[in-house]
Length: 315
Image (cartoon, rainbow, N blue to C red; front, side, top):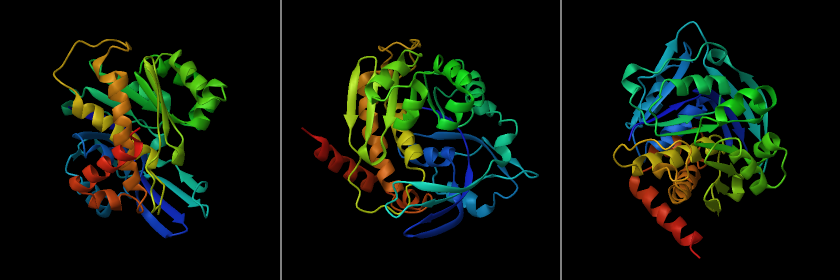
């Protein structure tokens, strides 16, 4: 089923103990789309500048299930750029620079051909921009948002307005604490549900994730990866796998059930199962810089690791 994502396309320079990747393709929208494309067609809505060259486009072309019609080229602007250096154990990182570029400009408008998208993911950007994108899809079936500490600190009122309109939110444990003032992840998740969503997914990095849903709570470990080259984009890939799984399982159109736990695509079982897809696809992302590993990933490899992960978490 049609899945649309808005967010950033970036040009990253990343330093890890395994080496340096200079001016490679990155961004929340990019990682999400690549991961989701293994499960369902994905439509990107983002802006890039004149420095976005053919090499970057060639990377996206390696994911045929990703539609790039919604990428808006602004030749006189600069693409969002980020540089970072990871610690020796890669559990922390230092941001070397952030150049917002096109992200300081008006957001792109989704093409008319995207207006039938039923599944909407609002990747990390200002919550007012996320809300405006959502306005283009009044008949959506499921809307999920990502956020970060910057917006919690600087645009909390906009974020709370957005939370009343989405079915789910994905954020990490420190962001959940910052948003709610609650130290316990379960309590923080339940507090987020009081703000509007049906479910919240709280990411804990190498320690997996927690689902807090109106119908229950679930926890899932991370895949026990042996090769970690670059953790950049792991969270966005996780969200892409999660949403791709949900969209791929959706049936025929049904009347929208506003924020109800009985909403079929937002049921506890559906979201819980989707976390495994997100976890496994993210485990491939971290095995290389940028999208290199996902670009080489085959369906057979993905299915084998999914089966392996199912055996690992079985009780």
